[in-house]
Amino acid sequence: MAERNFLVITHGEFGIELIKSVEMIIGSQDHVKGLGLRPGESVDNLKQLAIELVEKNTSEGRETVVFCDILGGSPSNVGLFLLSKEGVNYVATGVNMTMLISILTSGEEDTLTLLEEAKQEVEEGLRLIDLSFIKK
Image (cartoon, rainbow, N blue to C red):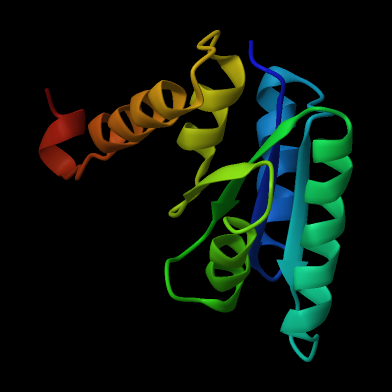
């Protein structure tokens, strides 16, 4: 696998707790960090924390892939800002459990291919289920 770390930036504790939930299924993930924008906290502070994580990863020779909850929110704006930083080439929005598990268990070395495969898995995993599903 290519040398890369993952940064999940979301509103509130969502991303931090999402990482914990993923770790319940696939085990500890030292190369995944989460940051949350909490009510009353500064977006500038969130941005600074994110910059510091990216700079640390870059100094260790690792790419950072950023995940955010929704496009257009403050966390995604921080993620999009990070695209201007060395070591960040991709920001993926709509982060969820399926996406993270797919990415963290894949052996894919090419980051773009990894993200495309995870996107496809998320799309295929989205199901609308009604009562007829359990009556089959």
